[in-house]
Length: 262
Image 1 (cartoon, rainbow, N blue to C red):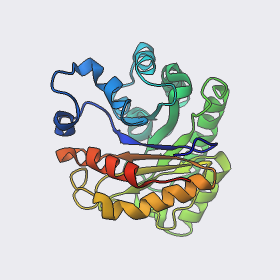
Image 2 (cartoon, rainbow, N blue to C red):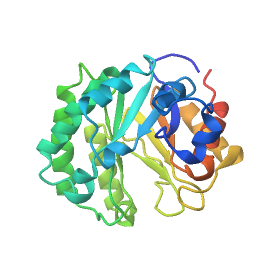
Image 3 (cartoon, rainbow, N blue to C red):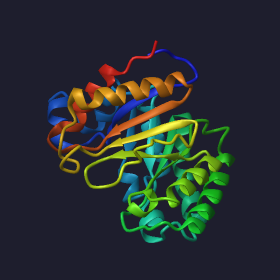
Image 4 (tube, rainbow, N blue to C red):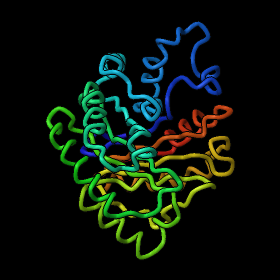
């Protein structure tokens, strides 16, 4: 991997999963040392527990101290904002979320906005939220140079025309990445429109959700795409959430081996 304006970040969701932890971490490694160990193998992780409960500032600060300078955390936005408030009247809660996560400083990468499958297209609501969220993140831009927004939508209505074209245009306007989330359960943006200066991929499993493996052959095409995107000057983040049976770990290694940028 060549160090230039664009980077490749490949990792998994979290670092405490039992299904792959036994085959990954040394047997006598204390749980509190797992993040440090993982950061010696991968260069990023997607934080999932922030979706359920916002970590305290000192927790984010601790994570920052346990990882290398070039490590990146992608942090999933609170479900209170996405699933309960449905992006409405969230200025205070988003501000608090960002303020806490800001303790990661330059190690804070994208903030993942994962919408529930029941959320139908509502452009006025989404645009209002993105305007406010973009203002908030820009206010931290000096301290958080890699912080961006990435949106994962799951309702099929977002992928039908003319809604899909309208969504792409809106995300481009705010430099928000449309997440390319692969699974057998939810739609995938087959045209893979680039809506930001970075690309965000999530792999949930090709068959059973979170519990099926991709393998090297399936990942070969994604490795080629990632290589092309990076050569175009875009940073790429790729995460595996098929954690059952340790598939995420194996697939992350497989993709990492196949990506080449020269």
